[in-house]
Image (cartoon, rainbow, N blue to C red; front, side, top):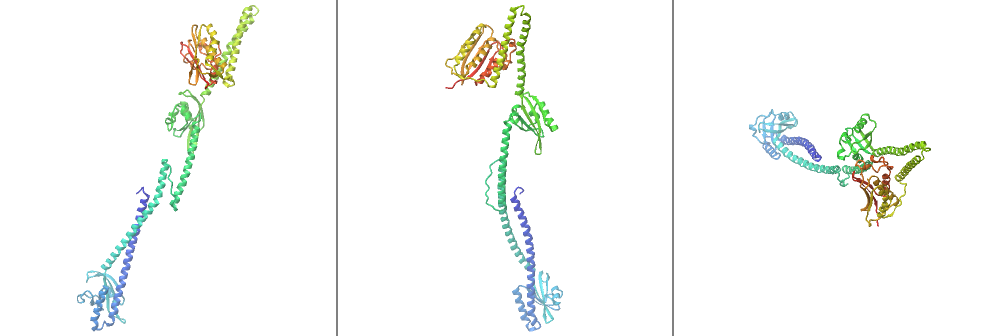
Length: 586
């Protein structure tokens, strides 16, 4: 009952109708009873009046008494009333139902006493003679102004009550039938009213579950129909708002997830409400690991936790930089208080400055390396110049030797400057690449021919292994030959006499891979990842000639051709440098 509005309406209507019909029934019963009683009184009085009128002319005529008695008896039979004639002294002269001789004096009867006073009288009392409740009507029998006797009519109250009982039953049945019909009609209309409300409830339930709404039939023109139309308009507005909100949310998610900066939003309870893909990657997390988790669990870095707490405590923007332990990222964290309606949160923005930090380190190292590379030949030339000034006039042969040494140092400086310029042009993309169709065997043979004499002077064997059916590659012959020269030169420099250098090429998918393999001293694992950096030299090669730019230049040349270059080495067992060039599709 508590859950059904229709049933509650029906019960309420039943109660209202029951109470209303009960009051109406009581009122009608009372009214009808009063009307019946009043009608009965009038009939009794009228009957008594007729009896009195018939008695008055012949009342003193003794000869007519028998005829009068018969007339009164006939009237009693016709009306159904008990008729009694009482003299002025209270003696019962005639009674239609009892023997007057055995009846007691009626002078004390209220209706008789009242009638003897000259006025009609109605009384409702218990009859000791008949042992039942009766209604009496008494009228004086007059001759002029003289009261000759009293004519009394009587009717049992039980008969009146029986008639009223039948009337009440009929009325009750009518009221019950009317109440039943009213209740049924009320129930029908109540459930007709509830039906559209149930449809609206069903629509709301479908909205909650995300199901598409059903079409509402607009057949009603009353308030319920207007409510359905209003709901449909509201539903359309809500759909439009939700669509707009979803679109805005998708746009916001797309913006956040395509940002390179990591973003976290932490609510007032200290839990992560939102996090983008960049932040998940920075902290090596998944959405399940972050959303609705505490900021301490997600951030895990003391400096970042302190950043969040400082912003939360002061309500002002805070900035810090930190190097994270997973991934060794160098981050700048910015904490900013934000307000969403009545809610306040902290937005953390993490900018990945790792590359900038590394570039700064490389710049510093570059300056240090350039300074080192320039200082050595300049210091040597300074010392040679001072020595030359002291010995040029006394020891001409020594002076010539120093001049040759200075010339070599100048050559080294010129080579260093030229290679720096070349590297700068390659990195900026200002060096034109003259691509041509070139056979891999031609590249290998040219490289062997250029470096064979130098290898033999160092006691090394150089040989080429290639397949004459390899497809041609797209390459700038001069610059690829320069790459071969740099790689073979390094192999000669770090391979002891008696060693071997092997040049080879093979096809791998749409690339041709060239390899320069030596049997030299090899490269240590901690050094191997850095050998293509500018000016980088292993400790064992610091004293050797060279600028440390050859491998870096080779790397940029190969990458400008769309290829890759890499190195493999086992310390003490030699090294293998490889690079790839794209083949020319037929």
